[in-house]
Amino acid sequence: MRQSRQAAGLSLRQLAARVGYDHSYLSQVERGQRPGSADLARLCDRELGTGDQLTGTFERRPSRAERPGRTADPLELAWQGLAAATGIADQTIALDDVRSTPPAVLLPELVSELQLLRARGLGGVQAVELSILIAETLSGLGERRPARRWWLAAHASAVGAGQALVCAKEAISGLAEQRPLPQLLELADKALAQQSSSAVAHAARALVLADLGRREETQQALQLLVGVGNETVVTAARPTDWMPYQLHWAEGRVCARLGYGVPGCILLERARELCPERWIGERAKIDLALAESLAVAGEVPAGLAMALRVLVELPDEWRDLWVYDAADRLLRVVPESERGAVELRRLLATNGRSVGSGSSWR
Image (cartoon, rainbow, N blue to C red; front, side):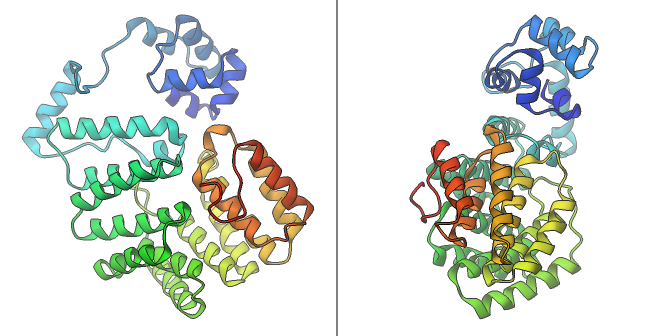
């Protein structure tokens, strides 16, 4: 059902409105927490243009892929035999699935994938990548302590370049969590020491230095990041890879912290162009960073208006730590008395958040 909905370009709320079901119920069905119904399958077939595919699937109720305590279907058993014989492993979590799935929905899927990986006796790079994704997702959901455990798991499993990736990703995640900046700088430095050509490691160091307010070092780090980014061909082969839009996002955010509002806007506009529209959470993060750059460039009303639009239109399931951290950063650079700032605080307060004053809401 989720695959069909995403293929049709609909959000959970949009599909829920069309079929007359609550969006939270549809979310539970997509996650396998509720069984759904023949009526729901029929209505979804009608709205998604899938013929009788979902209805037929519901009626057949095929066994799901193996999980602890369940019996694998013959196809899954055949795959496991092939994997064991050849040493190959499938990559079942695709980048588009990660970016286009709300965090609360994504988390159980990631955990299930890791359990499947272990059941097959596989690990290595895939286990590290899944641990990173689980840690990042938990951080986005505000689950700090469980996230730390998964970062530890990623560090324990990683070797070589994988260790550099874990350190860099944890440093960037730690910024949104407002972890102590000296600790995050240690992680970023460790990542660079292990892989000096890593774009994400350079991004992590530049972002941390910017938050530390070490201006000259930040400018140097930004120059290195731009140079590495220009020389690196980044692909979407794996969910943990950094893509060009993410590099421009990091460059733009560092520019804003340095007070370079116009270059920040240019970089973030480029990031926005490169980020697919269906990646709702990523685009919200970029747009809020762009709003901050607009404010730094002197376009405070435009920046606040953009942030208000993003948060009003953003579905609840995409409102996570990254979104609120970006809103917090915008409010730090605008006058408290600004009308749009007051409205933005009020909007965030209605969602149980109080931002613009450091870690008060975390």
